[in-house]
Length: 483
Image (cartoon, rainbow, N blue to C red; front, side, top):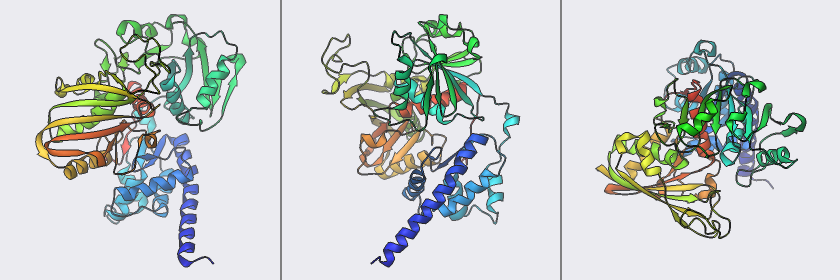
């Protein structure tokens, strides 16, 4: 016989599921029709399942004194769907919580409150246009960028993936194999949607995106205008060229406007960590680097710490998943130690991330050392920051500060925060943040602090790259509410 408590729980669950199912199409329509991305306390809901929407709401209790119920947030999503807004990232969780629990309503209706909090210019007034994008190379980062761009495809897409460039292949089934790698991923799971190929025209069709596959040995061989591609942003994922001379080859191809490198750059090319120094990007810049995954993971946290406490010096130790340049089994490798089997060994290596931080955060130049250990995991890495601060603090205060930064600061899209005592690396696969502060591992003693930062070195980094792409394209997508 069903107990009263059981019936109550089942009724509550059914209510949550119903609201999540009703919310799901509104979230999709808001993005497809208006370019609005809905989130709940930083958890993106675009293409989320009803269960994911429920879990995002549940996470609010980790940060606030009260729960946020779906029946409470649903009217806000519904009201936003009826508003005329420019493209933006809107955290409906923060809006609803502030209205319901923090006394910010001031006797306003939900509609009046949202009009006040979300007053932004219309898209027509911003002058924003969609940007053609070409992925030059289709390895791990290239395919994840493709997924991110495809999930945002549609009539109001700001970044349009128009083409992928590959080296010529002798195999007749190359296109099928490339599509299969996009469709299935051993780490990140199955592609969320439909992928088909048009072999006759060398096209991959995915969730409404029509992607031309171009085979070429070098940028010099390609005329993008022949495919209707103009003023494109070429994202070079190959790692072959890292200086201005090499990357400048792309600019000689017809139809190319700018180039973004998904690796640290050499010479005078700007290395950008979005959220920290993206304001350095000028409309006149033709070649930009999105730095490395590790640099993106640690720089936002280092900036936050330096802003509040000051950093005298420190050491960064990266515990990094093995990468494609290592060997599966013992074999010759030109770099020290990397010839040994990656799935079987921890391998001491080097990292330039500590020095690279100074390119994004000049005030830390010469203050950090760094090293790396490659470990037998395919994805998700950790950076351990051992810092000597300019003023003393304690664990609770430092963690509370970083938690607030992750929720209510310009770095809220770069820094995530967890208080879980059970989290392990595989739990972070698919994290969209540059880095995640593991507060349970924080060590503080006076002016010395040790911080542990998780990061999905593939997907989290790709999300950072996407933000740099938007900035280079002159596309502004504000995060609302501002606080």
